[in-house]
Amino acid sequence: MRWLRKIGLLGAWTGLLGVGLALAQVTPVQTKPPVLAPAPAPGGKFAPGPAPDPVVPPRLDKFATPPVIPPPQAQAPVPPVDKFSAPPPGASPPSAAVPQPPPRSPRTAAPAEPPPALPVPTNEPPALGQLRALLGPGVTLTYGSAVVTNPATGALRLADVLLRQRGEQIAAAELLLDGLRPDGITSATAQGMTLTAEDGTATLIGKVELRDLAVTRPAPGAQLRPDQVALGYLRVEALAVQGARPVAITEAVVQDYLPGRVGRVSFAGLDVLVPEAGVLDRVKIARIALEGVELHAVLAALAAGDVPPRPNADYSLAIEGITVTQGDARVGALGALRMAGVQGQGRPDTGRVTLEGLRVEPFPLIEDWLRKLGYAALTGDLSAETRFDATAGRLELIGFLLGIRDAAAMGLSFTLEGVGAEAASRMDFQDARLAAFSLRYLDQSLLGRLAAAEAATTRRTERQIRDGWATQAAGAMAGGGAVAPVLAAVQRLLRGQATEVTITAAPPKPVPVSELPPLALGGPPAMQRALGITATAR
Image (tube, rainbow, N blue to C red; front, side):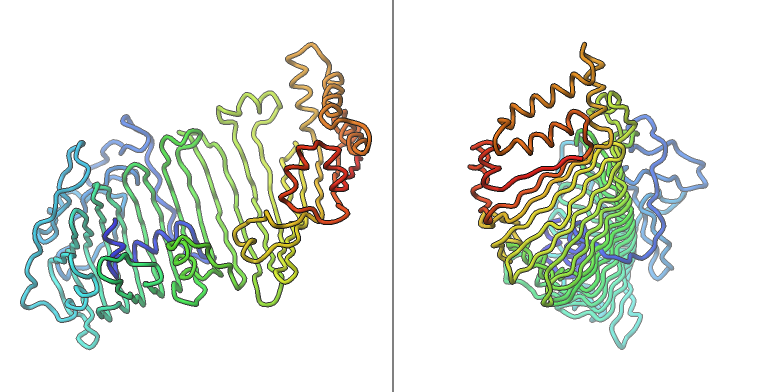
């Protein structure tokens, strides 16, 4: 919602939710798992199921059209909000103080313009004036009731709240506020929220908790920038975005979104529909967590189109329990993606990335290929570790390892010199020089499976096929001369006489990266002479 990014309290809530879609925290609060959709019924995979017993509220798919949930009566206890539940039987219609989004025809993209702002009630608690100042001009605030719960601090409980600006609105069954001031708020809790965008897209939120919000008001007509908002804590429960690309999140938490502070972000129970994506249409992630990054500076740089600053402290990122599906079939899964690093403080920067339990199922594009090679699925792991010494200008890929179980493994390492800190942050190595390189391949059964699959469809034996590969390698490498030792090692692997080949480069002097493409055009002999390439097989 465009206008949410222009106002204080609500702009911070929605803006920081967007932050979390890219960032996350290490220790999330445990919550119940997301409610799963019922068995598919006629009308689509995510359509609601058949009506249950009228005494029990029906469970709906989180991506179905959101039900209308009536707000509670003024001062009454607020019942738990379930974004996936229909209103209980016999529920009274919503209070007249909370207008519902106008109905939209299939051809109408945006809801109707809201009516003119209502006059401020004469008996309104003074603290609500602070709230209106915080929201800014152009935002209409109406409510069913307002009760002062703490006269000393001006704490309020609002029921049946509605905020509107042009064709967008936010409704909440209950809103608790404390420490209101024109530039921020000490704490706020909202329950039973519905955000409706101009195009009619609805976002349901069960509960929002916020603490220590401060907003620097932008100049008239200017957009609110990420660095003009500071926030101590934000927690969102049971979020479901409707529309063309539905998204559901069980919980999102942002902590220490403050200037100069290292923040933490986490998500739990992320569920995304991606229609028309080709080989997949749904992605589920159990948990995303990040810590050790100055969120305030990163978001400000991204908003300005600049490169985010490098972390100056230890950081970690974990994305766990990833499942990708197409229809009712699982396409792939990943146990965890983990990143960790040590930055700055007079030490070389080090980083490590691992992919654990990567599994690719036999979906249609690769099913025949996997079957011919005798694989039920592909499973493997990946790890990479880097070290960057900004003082020396040296970047090292200490070890990159990709292993596909019962197939093959590949390892890679290299050293680059003349790498500046800014170039490293941009991943721009055109001015760097290659000082060393090593590539290792270990065959566990893949080449044999490929030869057997080709032999099954031709009149040649596996031996003839592998000898043919060796002959093709000689032609590709212009065999002979300086490349002869390298060619011999590769041919032993292709013929099945060896299972492991290691190729290394130790140039007499570091070679500029920008000169590698012209060297490659000169063919393998030119590359071998310039880089000092050797190979071994065993």
